Image (cartoon, rainbow, N blue to C red; front, side, top):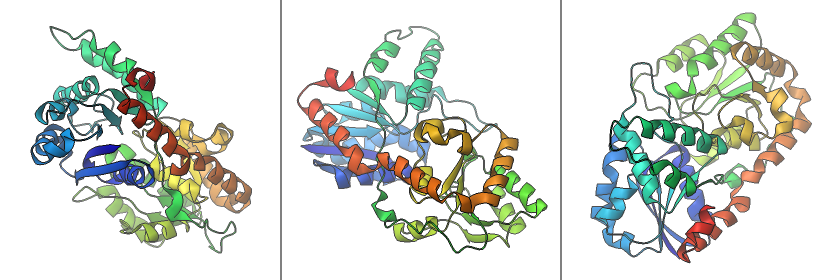
Length: 370
């Protein structure tokens, strides 16, 4: 099969997912990408660009795949594409949290709605996102003041399903030693430097333990899309004696080596539909400390929930204090966490994707979307 994958925001987990799909699929996948910036403009204008620049290639494809950062309905119309299509939701504009000073733009939500209606199959990367989207879509449609497309909710959900992403763990092999020589435990942040990851909550917990004199070191990684990331610059000054590394890591080899230095990975996010960075850290035998919300209870095996999911900010501090004091006692747990998260390795995930692609090419859309 000849498949064209259109990614208008080629960065972060979007990039990791696409790269892994191209690498492991048995089909020929041609990736058309745009840099990960100006996300609102990408959402609204990338279909026009792709249709103009790659219309012939798109029309000659057996299948096209687009992500939620593109208007699939516009693309199919402008490129005159009549074949099967998949829309993959990394996130969506109906449930994405907004900063305090912003209000939801209904036009962005309409892009996701029109795209979902135009696709043969809508794929969501977790049950959490699919369920949240289901409720939000019904509410969104009901906000339309007149000539309401009452059919839209049922039509979209009928062809929507969950398909977990694959992770390319090959860059992280061989796994690191279970017993580490670090004199102090190392805490890892490897998320985007954005408001929805709540870095202020993360750093508040660290400042409290720092004031108590609890020993730890820090790895502050992740992509920064801000001009002046205030919380991070403040932390670099307040915790400068504890920071081992600060800033984005350019290569996979360097990133993998840095993850192997960590003992505990923390998330304080209010928006996470899968958890790529946490999955990578757990594969490298790093202990997770995650909020009991979003997709985290889904990707973390139930046997680990009590120890590694926290309820609120106080619980985060208390559990982190405990892990910092007892992290050397968790070698067997590290191994089990790594083995459990390996179910998302592309070697185990790719067959489901390739089978879906074949079903669509054979015209078995109903079976694929059931």
